[in-house]
Length: 151
Image 1 (cartoon, one colour):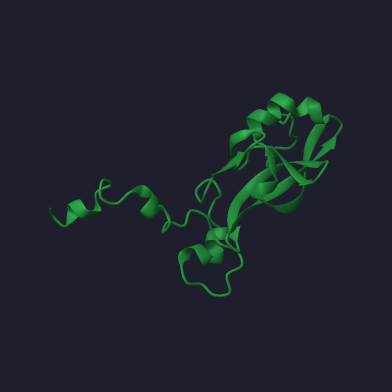
Image 2 (tube, rainbow, N blue to C red):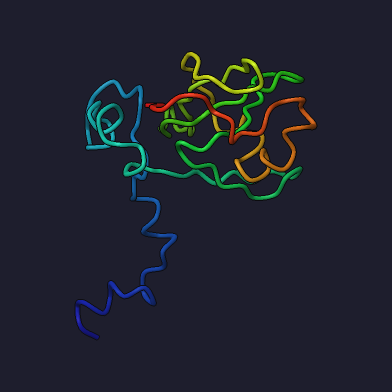
């Protein structure tokens, strides 16, 4: 066996390699010990390049993929759902979080509101499910966002 063949996927399963990969910037590290701790990755790299999607598994809705710049529903407390647009994903103290633009309903359309942060455990509906069921929440369709430039 050659030295290179030891690094073949057959000898090194992805699950062993995966734990060393840092896919999202980290927010909150006391010191910078890797590029994922750097503020530039979190604040300056375009979100569609630095972790554009998170997958959330839920017993109620199954597996959902949430993408930056796609409207979704965030459940910030029981009975309180907030339409929002994710702008980036990051880790904080070992947990995955999202930063969002809150969507505010105004005359049957959404306008961009303030920034909020939430752990991904509070993500309720991804864009496809939000599009199918927005009327259950008495909200406009997530295709109705007012404005030319969101970000």
